[in-house]
Image (cartoon, rainbow, N blue to C red; front, side):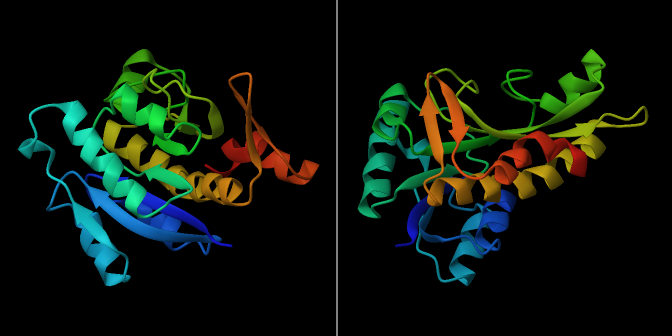
Length: 213
């Protein structure tokens, strides 16, 4: 049976597109945005995917909005909820409700540079390697169990925009891979760490992610 997925996004949804076009063993049951004008919603409509816009500005607080969001998600009976550029901090109650089936991608090699402006901060710190991380979401912001990472070199003439574009290419590669592993039942969280079930060759994807930058 195909794994049912709900995608949350706030903007163009380029990672959503990468997942949708990757030929994964999933059914994207719905795409939900907290911004009615998000470009990712138009792309979803074009693909015949159900969409829903829930404007967070119409709600008094984060908790009430997240309750409504969770109810909308549950209507679609997803096995997995994917954050694809969803630019809101989720409430603890929401995270607890979807614990173990809530994935996010972050544009840094966590635990380095959680939060915003990761590319600017990486350049300011003078790091030689930067990248992106797919992780399970927990109440500890940008610190959930890591599924996969990809690294890119930081070059002397990089700007935040140039470095960010290089990282985004890797995001589009590793996020579909992480979703595939979840759909295939190959991810197990044990003692706060993610183990990938399967043959040794598949395990090497984790180690070699930084070789394709």
